[in-house]
Image 1 (cartoon, chains in turn green, blue):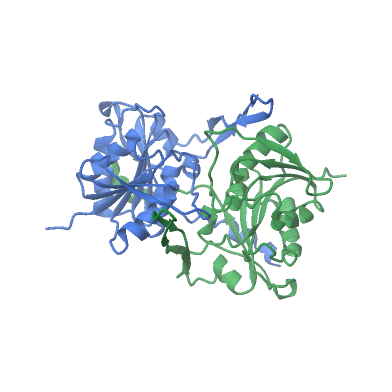
Image 2 (image 1 turned 90 degrees about the vertical axis):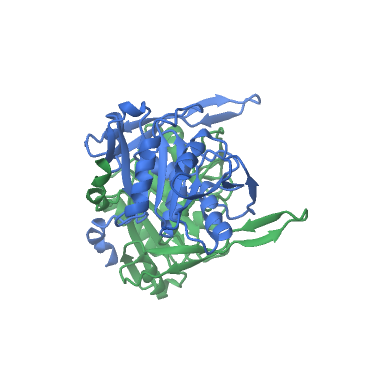
Length: 256
Length: 256
């Protein structure tokens, strides 16, 4: 009999966010599960790590029979601690992060704690998948995407991710029957245009609060944003090599 | 006469770190300068943004005659606020971030607040350069790299960055005369192996503190790590599209 795969589950919304429960529900049908998640919401933390403070792990039991720990750090810290402290010599077969409450399509991959946690596991060669649902609300319906999440996890456990170790998966906010299928895509060339609201605190000191509009001028039909707008689940194979190779020869002038 | 370029200077070590002063020294010889930097050290913040808290800007005057603001947020917040609140309709010609105290070569680009600030400016099409010196100490010598920093900034102001808007520049900790020159490189395929130190606090509660070893098994002579180890300044043209294109066709099976 094959050894059951070991699946690390994490997220950036914290241990008691409904999204992580949905992911644990699926993961436990496919393997042994370890959960390490932040003890507070960590949305927008990007690839932040905790350098100047100690970190703590606390055993908790929100998922019947599943080993789970809350961590005082960022999503990336959770993955590092799982690997180095909790698992030591055991090897993770798959890391899944999420399900995030809200899209991480396009450039959002950079800001996302969910995706950075998955990225962190991928850096040490672990196949990793970040899942996000296009619904920010606490009571979002995480059931609809489950059959597809299971399909993608099974596929990666069986086949790996050729040339890479990371998938960015986004799920449209639709009933299961209305999801048209899965599209393997590229990251759309979209951006945020900030609009800080300016206000004054009770002591009449000025402050700014981040808000913004997501602008997509990328009309390609091979992008994650297109897939999501057209009722598909988007899967973007992703990487950590940020080198823009075609620029290298054109900048050699600098070496003179 | 040509209009003087507008240069935004930021960092992740805070307004009073010696590295940012060195960058301002160079930038002011090339154009008009605006400085927006965090009001506390933000190393390892990656691409974190502040969503759930208000942000504040405070006018300060550490650089004789240069407009400068401390920001309560992350390095990425500094760039967003500079763009949206302080500059509004003015266009930044160049964003420079650093000089970071310590290397941001190879995979460190992901964790680095310095590089994420530069990345953030590049996302809206501003040519951006993150500079780092391979010396963690507060009294590192930031003078040695200045002639090269000026050369790189001048080159980008004149020629732009073909196909991209971001350079990751690392400077070896050598006297100017011992720096062999500039190499335009790719990001080395290196990684961190974590070694958390485990200890107990005065209440006998366990905690972990991040430490680790940087491991480079990439023997290519076209990498940033190679350049630095051989006395060169490394320049890696970088990008925000994380798509691993060659994986896409091989994963189409998932769409069936």
